[in-house]
Length: 609
Image (cartoon, rainbow, N blue to C red; front, side, top):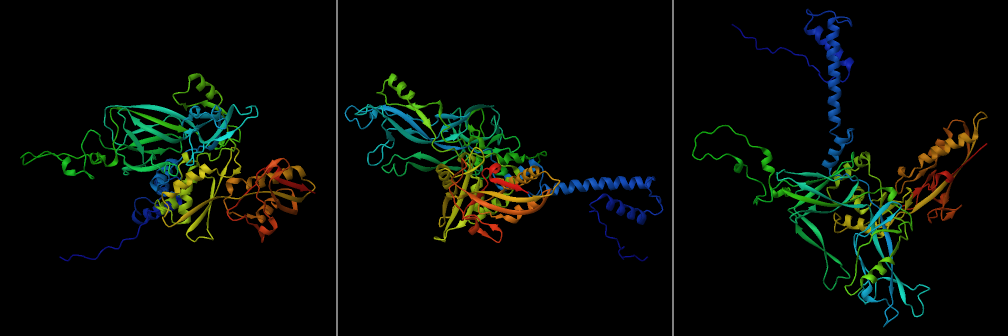
């Protein structure tokens, strides 16, 4: 008996068709090839046609969902908000809420002059305005973030306050008005207790009430244990600010101390709901755990001399019950003090912060209660400059653009993209930069010039405040290479206007055509569409005008620079010669500058013939 060892030739079959018609055609070919005697009628009204179309429909739907699932694995093609958030967290991009505004606020107090030396106030009467004092402006609350000690002196023994002699103080003056400036941050401070049941839950989570939480100030349990915020639960040490009591305290007011953080948490923000969640560790505080990695053999059942045992299983979650990832609270009460609220509306104008909501002060014990009340009643406040740094929450589309640079940066600043991604990912409690640009320093090859700009309450560009620059410098210095230098400078804001003249056909309404063109130009020059060092293409404006219905021809177009006070409107002081800045129809800003059409309603002037 002979055996046929020749393999049967088989046809290649494709199951990866992507549309209904392709599925139906391949199913029809398959049926006619392998089942020619079973079914021969595949018309639309036949049973064979029904089976073909039913299977083709199912294949088409399954193919769609398969493609959709693959797309949701890529940050560039994902469209579902929940998946985008997961991919953002996996890439290390923090999801932040609205950013608070910061403002320098002047505090004025009235103190009687010293009887022995009328040129200075009575030293013992000088108070301390404590951190946590709240002031307000148009419904927006600001909180003082550090103490203001009016009795503080510099290394030469001079008071740090600015002394003002009122006109009605007499000669010699009987009292003085003293001024000190403190930094205040917008937002409402709240304290919320969270009872934790006596049931162990690894990676326990608690959600804070309200939205747009900008800062977690303190997390303490009922036993007095302080929980520290970390970027990842594997981080077991943190830096703590400690008051410097040494002789160099004037030059270095605070020191950084490295402390262990067994009690720690990470902050997770939900971009869809705006809710902030604290996630704690997975270990138990009441057990001794010195192993960096738990031993799986300790979780198995002991034999105790038995030769056989019944089947059992090990829960892999038990391997996570280690203090390596921090401690999970149990049987206690967690008290969270946090600050929430922010956005563009918090960028209030100068002089608008003038109300004191709660005043926290400390006086010398020798000062009587009546005098304390008198001095407290004399305290007034005012912000000489507008508040800045407040921004609305970034959208998921804005955050998606940071994924590639965040993955490449690996928590260090080497390239231009690394620097920009760190600038835009600065925690919102430090304020937020609206636009940033990077240029090489012509005088120092190891230095980089970082240009930044902020927005005010109405969304117009303003110079970033010094407090925002200080926060940015501290944030960038953590991941800066030791041999590199970053110079933070203000971007030049170039305000401009557009004048044009057109010819319309005899049927069109001239005013309607002008209004239509102005609306399109206004939309084109929205500040959200511009970056630092981005030029303006005059041909784009010409295209907008010519393509408008009713326009026959464009007679004239001119871009003009607006600066200072013009027609009662306040512009930036930057003067740019548009003719010199134009090259082949492209208008370039100064180095590190940004264009802004500040008042579109009046800065666009059109004429029709």
